[in-house]
Amino acid sequence: MSFFDFGFEMASWNMDDGMPDAILRTLRKGFLTGSEYQLLAQTSNISEFKIVMEDTDYGSSIFEGQPEDRFDVPSLMMAMKEKLMEQMQYLITQTSYPLN
Image 1 (cartoon, rainbow, N blue to C red):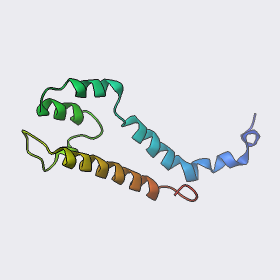
Image 2: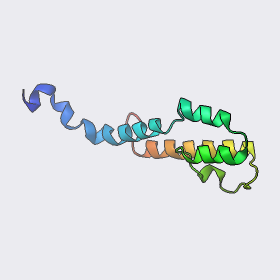
Image 3: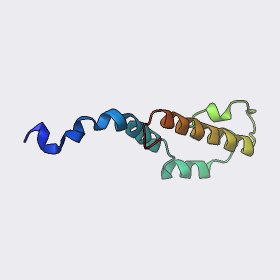
């Protein structure tokens, strides 16, 4: 079996779609798993919640600008949405027509 048996379009597939595909696979691995949700549900105070979240892809960046002993839920939601928006904008800049 030769290279040409698969079709010549495979020679250029990665040129347009490889980077966005890799980005999406990376973002998918960053979703919270069932075990992470269980850990979050079992937390009894804010510091435990922060420790669990720091082990995820969200990291400690979503807690920047918030006091150590408490946090504002709307601010936390906004920080998470901004992180997702930044990731989606980066993905869009790496795609070509017709995906973008």
